Image (cartoon, rainbow, N blue to C red; front, side, top):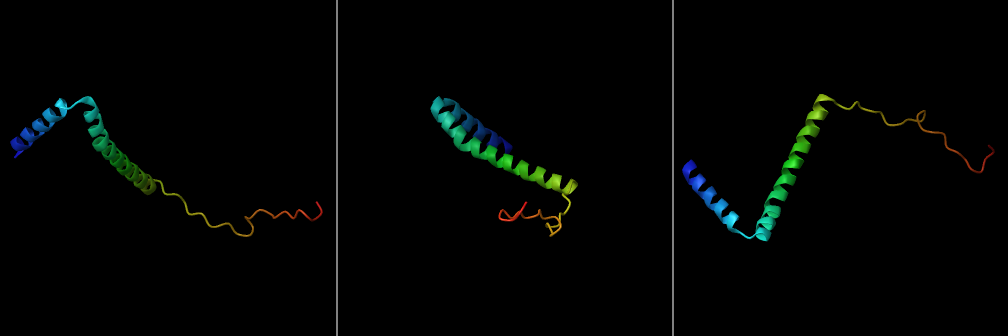
Length: 78
């Protein structure tokens, strides 16, 4: 099984090495760029979940009347 995979992979490498540079670059961008973005998003989510789990953000109550800033009436005396 591993031998068959190695032979297939060698064929793919040979095919890719024989392509002209613009085709190699285009293939790289079409395959490696989305793969890299997917891995980066996965790592971001794992780190975000781990940081939330180990350092939870305390719950904050919504602002009440005493926390709300005083409204200013422009027409009234100062």
